Length: 144
Image (cartoon, rainbow, N blue to C red; front, side, top):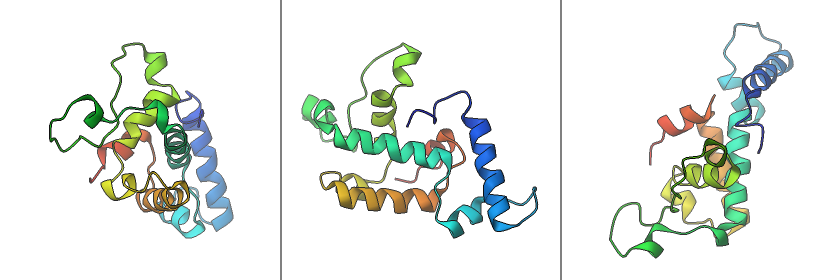
């Protein structure tokens, strides 16, 4: 969970791709996206997202839903409330990042967050479909 926001995560991810290429016995310039799928391995960033979201679900009692703060019938009423902070160190922490990432998962996965085992499985299947090469790619390619 802590390597996803690390400045060294790019180097670790490049090493992960190199290992996948070695396992699959392909050339150094071949794309790894399909290979991760074939092997059933989450990318470093997908694993970071998975671990962070599991942290949020296990500690959901310290989070607040938007609907708890106001009674407006908005499309984001069942999202977690993102606290107002300006300190980068807090924004890169597990709590803040987890809330932000949780709000980007599809509603169908959010609905089962109360059942940890079902949520784990659904989240892993969702992340395996996306195979994000960065946290930014996960957020930009969001299709709620």
